[in-house]
Every structure is written in structure tokens, then in C-alpha cells.
Image (cartoon, rainbow, N blue to C red):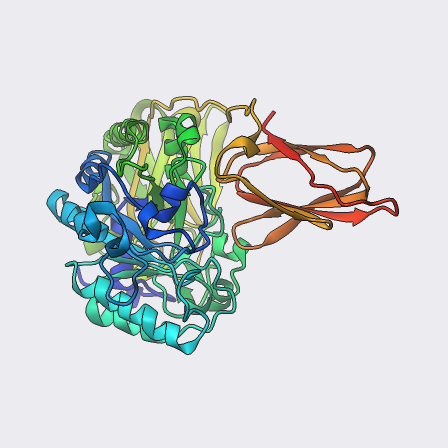
Length: 560
């Protein structure tokens, strides 16, 4: 079935975006100098000799990711510290200057070879911000970065992703158009993830947080200004009538940190937590990019893979049996016989159901010959024609009549939700708001065995005792980096000589104000009403008392 213009509405996805949607699970791999300095953001001044994995095994990474259901993987070939994991002609700050294999090997080469061997689509993260390169901040850096793009895009086979992190690049004068032209001239199928200045050029946008949560709704459409100005609330939800089609990617780590830290081995996400991440990302019309950080050996910890494989087994088994296949289907209208109601149950992307063009109250009813029990639903609209639907309800017939159990706005490529078990013999989908003919690609209801996720582990030890945590302070503030995204709700700090304080928390894009209080004693305790589960950084800003004398303040942070 060809893409018929009569069905197109608003911005429509390009072929790269449709391929990206079809991937399902995507892996991020943060590995580099930070792995060996036990940091999250390096300064760019660490010696290349520090990078020396003893058992680097990219085949171990990719083989296990394949077994866990992942279809693509992105490697951080250069993080903000500027150290490069390939043999670059344009800098000595790379693996050729390290002790690893006498400087003669190439991590990205081993990574891409492994991806080809096991059938994963390879991509790379190349940080625009570079804290080591001397030309950074000058026009010469544009050419430096472009030359590195050319190396990566021409010497390593097929590349499916180029990832441009926005960190450190607010207001930077890059030539994004030059870089985009290089990417799509050399690798026309490569999906570009980007932010801020690259807003006009990206295929995929940031979701606005790093806690694994797409918005409700999360439309792929969005205004370019929302990406350019990194307005996190709008990145999270998109906008039905937005000017650009750029679906959200949910980037999140399987551990608190992006890079490996040994003390985080006990905080690997559980299979149940990963299932919840799937529902809050892929199940909300977004993509899921899950990070697996290799350790100093150059291997990914088996705990990470064990959890990911158990999650994938549960995911695969959960959606095997579509209960709607046993139902009679009744529709309020039909566009034509080509778009018949039976297409609703087919998994082929080219088979869609279309309502009649004059239908003002589109409705699909599923009627069973006996009662069923279900606790999850999946719906897809034919997203290749753009977003048509902007409001829908799902209802089940009970002894008290029709009970609406879901009221939503965005369906998109996929809407998936789990909920308490419902027993019924009739289920109804109503399209309550739409801008063009509603097109349904697929629908299913399921009875999942949903394991109960344990609550956040209480941190009996001070979070700031972990090796990657860092505090920078002066008389007016304490800038606290947790060394990862740990949930917390209790802060204790030395407050002698202070009149009051303000608490600010980093939301992934900027510091946002949380609360302020007058100081009551020399040791202040902040008990938060809600758990903060999205921030790796917080700042305490001080108003000094007249008796102030500078001291080095201690702080402790817990989840209680």
C-alpha cells in the first residue's frame, strides 16, 4: 500500500523516522575516560594513559544486547572531556596515545564489527561540547568537528544514528547545517538526535528529562522553538499542531549514573522497573534508549544483562495473546473495502483500518461470546500519514453500563497502558477528537502477568559518599553533583552563619527553584514532601547573616 496523499495530515515522518520507530529497544553505551576517572563529566585534562581497559569485549556487549531484544546500539565515541575512542587524525587525545594495546587499536572499530556480527544497527554519540580541544569556541572548531564526523561516517560501515547532546552547548556558535549535510551526504539513513541550535535539522528530539518518562500526551509534532529553547515541558508532550515531526527519545540509564561506578552495582533497575519504563516511553509514542555502562575491564556487568533479559522475556510473553482475536468487530463506518475492519488485528504496517470520511463519531466495538479478563491495551494509528487523532476513550461494558477506563489524547505510533484487571464481554474505542480521518493500524488487549515493582531502595548511606559525587562551594552556594540520578527526599547541611537558603534542582536542562526557608539552627534538615527522582545535581543558594564567617560546609543526602 503506497502512502496515499489523501490521508496525509500535518507534518509526516520521513523514512528515517519510520525506521527508528520500528526498532523497539535501543541501547546506549557510555564508555570512555570517565569510566577510569570515576566521573560523570570529565574536565578534559586526564592523561590518555588512564584509559586502559584490561578485557575490552565489544562482542560481549552486543551479543547480550541482542539476546535482550535490542536492535541498535549507540557508543559514546567522544564525551564532553574530548577523549576519542577511535584512531583520529585530528587529535592526539584519543586511543592512539593510550597504553591500551600500545595505542594501536580502536574501540569504535571493535564496536561496529560486533554490531555487524550480531545484527545490531550501530551509531555514535559525538559530543559537540569539547573541554579538551584548544580550538573549541572558535570557527576552527566547526571544521575540526566536521572532520571527525567524516572519519566516523566513512571508515566504519553503515551508521544508523548520530547523537548530538545539548549539554554545554547553550548559545554555542556551531555550523549545524554543515554538520547535518556531512551526516546525510555520507550516511543518508542515519537518524540525527539533537537539541537547541540543531532544532531545524533533527529527526528525533530529547524527551525533556532523564528519568524515563514521556509525557501524556507525547505527540511527535512540536514547534521548532521548543527544541531550540529546550523548553522541557513542551519537549515532554509535543504539540498536536506543531510545525515539525520530531518524535521524542527517552534516554535513561539502567543504573543511577551514565558511566560505570562499582558502588552502583546494587542499584540496577529491576525487570519490573524496566517494564514500567517501556510503558512510559515506547507506550507513549516515544523511543526508549537504555544505557548500559561497561566497567574498567571493558565489559558490561552481568547484573545489568540479567535484568534486561528477564524484562525482555516478560515483554515478549506479555503481548503474545491478543484477546481481541476472539471478538466480533463492529465499526461505525468504513472508508472503503481496502481499509476493512479486520485490518485492526493485523500486525503488518501496510494493513490499516480507515473510518468513513463523513463519520463524526468514530467508534469500534469488540464483542465477545464470553467474558474475558484483561489488564493492558496497545493501540497504533497509521503514523506514516501524520497525527490524525487528538482524543480517544476506551470503555468496557459492566453491570452498571459502559465504564471508561482510559481517556487519552495521543495514540501515534503506539499507545500502551497497563491497569487493574477488568472483566467484560464488550470493549469500545471511541475517537473523541480528530483533525482528519482516523486511521487505526493495530489494536490489542492482553492479560499480563505484571510483577509488582518494589519501591525505591532507601539509601541508608549518604548518597554523597559515592565516589563520583562532587561538591563545589563558595560563601554563597553549594553546587552538589550526586554522581548519578539517585532518588532522594532528605538533605542535611551545615548552616552556621546563614540567614536563609534556596534549594534549586537541575531538571536536565536548567536549574528550577524548589523551595526556600529561613535557617533555624547550625545544622539544617530539609524534608521534601515528594521524592526527587530525576536530578543528578542540586544547588543550595545562601543569604548570609551579619555574623557570617566562611566555613567548608558538609552536606548529606538520603532517601528515607
